[in-house]
View 1 (cartoon, rainbow, N blue to C red):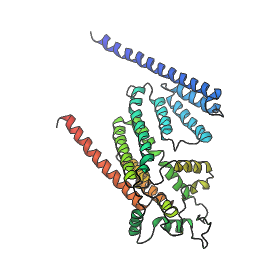
View 2 (view 1 turned 135 degrees about the vertical axis):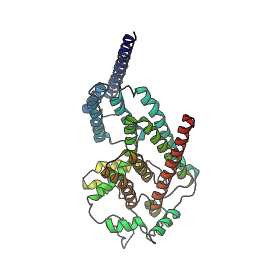
View 3 (view 1 turned 30 degrees about the horizontal axis):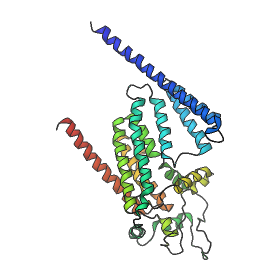
View 4 (view 1 turned 30 degrees about the vertical axis):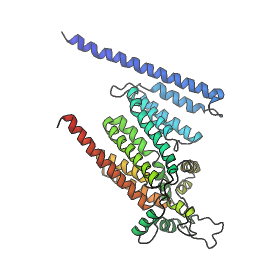
Length: 379
C-alpha cells in the first residue's frame, strides 16, 4: 500500500529540483545578457570586454547544473585567464577573487541535492563581509598612531642570527647585493643575474593571495563541516593579526632601512618580483607592485603570509596520506618564510609570531569545537 507513495515522492522532488535549476540557469543567463549589453553600450569599461571573455562566461552559465558542469568550470577558468591577460589578476581585490570562486562553485554545485545556491550565498556572503571589514580595519589601523616597532623585531633577528641580520646576509650571499662606495644617488640592486629558483620565491609569495581562498572553495565543495572549521580559524587569525597591526605596527626590513635608517647607509631592496624576470612575466611583477602599494606598509608584525601558509598546511595535513604531498605541506611554510626574509618583506621574528598565532588559534578553536560537540551530545 505504501509503495506508490514512496515512488511518487522522489519524482516530485526531482521535478522541483529541475525547475529550480532551470530557473537559476535562466536567471544567470539574464544577468549575463544584461552585463554584456551594459558593458557593450559603453557604460562599463571603455575598451569593452573581449568577445572570448563573454563567450566563455556564457558557456559556464549554460553548463551550470547539467552533466557538462565540468565544462562550465573549465570555461570559468579560461574566462579568468582572459581577465588576467587583459585587466590583471584580482590580487589586490579580495572581493573580486571571492566572486570568481563563488561563481565557479555555483557552476559545479547547481542542482546537487547536498548543495544549493541559497546555501552558497548564506555561507559565503558573511565570510566575504567579514573580510571586507577586515580590509577596512587593516587600512584604518594606522590612525591610532601607535609607535612603530622598528628595533624589537630587528633585535630578535640579530639574537637568533648571532649578530647578523638574516635579510642582509641572504641578499649579500644569494643575490650579490653590495654596499656601493658612493651612496649618493646609488641604488642597492642585486648584482647577480636572476636564477631559476627565484621564480619559486616569487610564485610562493604570489600563492599567499590565492591558496587560502582556493582551499576554502575546495573544502566547501568537498566537506562543508571542514569548510566551517577552516573559515572560523581563518577569520580569527585575520582579526588577531589586524589587532596586532593596530596596537604594535611593525616596520619590515626594507622600510626600517629606507625610512628609519636602522642600517646606516645600507638599503634593503624588495626583491620578491625578481623571479618573474626569469620567465619574462613582467605583468605579474606589476600586479604585485600594485597590491603592495595598496596595503598598510607597517603591517609586518606578525607575518600573515607565513601564518596563512602554515594554516593551509595544518588544515590539509590530516586529509592527506601521500608522503610526497605531506613533504610539500611541510616545505610550503618553510619556503614562504625563506622567501619573505630574502626579499626584505619580513623579519624572522615576524614569521615566528605568525606561527605562534596559528598555534593559538587552532588549539583554541579545537577546544571550543570539542566543548560544543560534547554539549550537543549531552555529555
